[in-house]
Length: 300
Ligand code: G3I
Image (cartoon, rainbow, N blue to C red; front, side, top):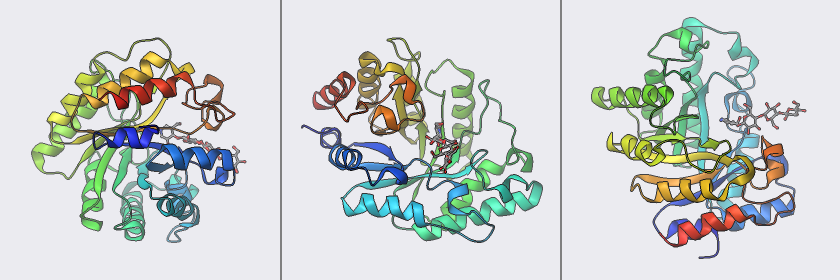
C-alpha cells in the first residue's frame, strides 16, 4: 500500500494524525492529511477550555469543524480529552473540592451527549501521574483520589458504547516509575470493575536510536490486563528512522495495539517544530522516517 492509513489497515489498525482547525485552510496540509491518515485527533479543539469556555455554555464549533472535516472524508475521530489538569477554562481552574468534582461530571456528560455515536474512543483522563508513579497534584487530584474512576464511570454511563482510554506520556519504558504507576491503576480498575477499555501511550520520543527500554513489553503488559493500547501522540526528535520503524514494529507485534497517531502533519505544524519530529517536512515532502514507517506497516 502507498499511504500510511491503507498500510496500517492491512492488519486492521489505523494510522492517524492530530489536526489543528486553524490549518484547515492550508491545502498542502489538508491534502496530506486526507490522503495519508484514517484517524483524526483534534490537537486542541476538544479540550475542556475549547468546549466549555463558560460554565454551562458548551461551544462545539471548533471541535465540530474538525469532526466534520474528518468524517466528510471518511476518516474516523478520536476524542481528546475530557479531564486534565491543563487547558481547563478559567472558571474551572478556580474551582476545587465538590464544586470541581461536579463540574468535571457535568463536562463529561455534556461533551459525550454531543458526540454520542460519533466518536469511537475518548481520552477520558490525561496525564494524571508524576514521573515517579505517584499521582500528579492538581485541582482535580485535590477533589479526592477517586476522581479518575469517577470520570470513567461517568463516561460509561453517559455513552455506554464509546471506548474509554487513559492517556499519558513517559509510560513507554517498562522499567519507569510512571509506567508502573499507571499499570497498577489499570490493574486495580480491572479487578474492581471500573470501566476502562484502552491505554494511550503518547510516545513523545527524544533522541538516540533505540526505543525506551522494553517498549514492546510495556504494550503487551498493558494489553494482558484486558485493555487495547494505542500510540496516541507520536513524535521523535529529528525523526530518527530507527525509532520510528521500531515503535511501528512494536505496535504491529502486539495484537491489541490498535493504531498509531502522529502528533501533527508537517514538522512546521508540530508543538516542537524546532526538533523536526514528524513524517513530513515543512514543505510537505515525505521524510526518510515516513518511508521507514510505511515499509514496516507493509511488511507486517
Ligand atoms: O490559539 C491561541 C492563539 O490565539 C494565541 O495567540 C496564542 C498565544 O499563545 O496561543 C494560541 O493557543 C495555543 C494553542 O496551542 C494553539 O496553538 C496555546 O497557547 C498553546 O498552549 C497550545 O499548545 C498545545 C498544548 O497541547 C497545550 O497544552 C499544543 O498545540 C498541543 O500540541 C499540545 O498537545 C499536548 C496534548 O494535548 C497532551 N500531551 C502533550 C501534547 C504536547 O504538549
